[in-house]
Length: 339
Image (cartoon, rainbow, N blue to C red):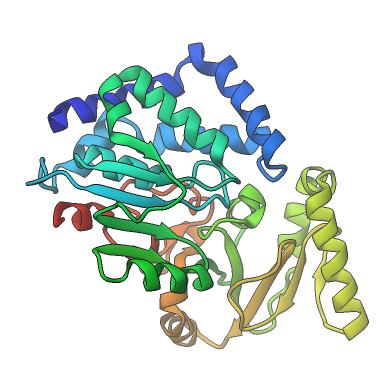
């Protein structure tokens, strides 16, 4: 199968996911995914599928993306992919990369995201049945020629031990940071709220830590996010985390800001608990840049108002990665092209 056929398959997948004809099916899959994973509420499943269709699976985006890579592998390989399942369809990009580059996928799906990945694979094989021969589900990936694995720092050590002697990409814990100047308006706060709260903050592209000027007033930000309260107060998993973390802060006398479903507390840790956002203060832009540079290996995305900080994205855009926004900054397609 030539690359042009593979490209046409994924263009067709994007067209299908955007079509009115698929609306009832997409709604059904949202409820099915939610049944197996309560974090995957139907509106978030719909958001994730729309992001795939609109930000990745368009003819223009796919064609431009592929134009810089070798069109065919010298010899197709079997690539084992251990997928994450923290947010809906998070493993799809790796699946796309392996298949469109001409290799075969040996997929270990996450039990947390099995429904959506299986749904997308079924759509791919419906469009182009040849792909059915190039996708295999497996619990063990030992038979693969190369590996792509995403997990925590602990699982990364496990992957490195077992797969380190073969070509691999092994990803570790990362998170994202929001950089505030103190001059943001409510529109920008709305965008930042999306970056923090989309998918309940469970993704590596979610902002879990803020850098703010010394003496920063958090009240306008928290007030802007007040209207979102029902979504979070009505999910027991979120409320349980919020109540637990709040009790810990109260018992230990930890200073924090609280709007009834989201808390902010000062900490140098980039990764925050569910329902909590950490913050650090900076003196000036140079100080902020130095903090980010020191933590660069743990940061997936930096977000700022209108993307003013070099290398950052605008508030509201962290959950809209393009095809070339590779996790951990490692070019998956270049890796596959060298196999």
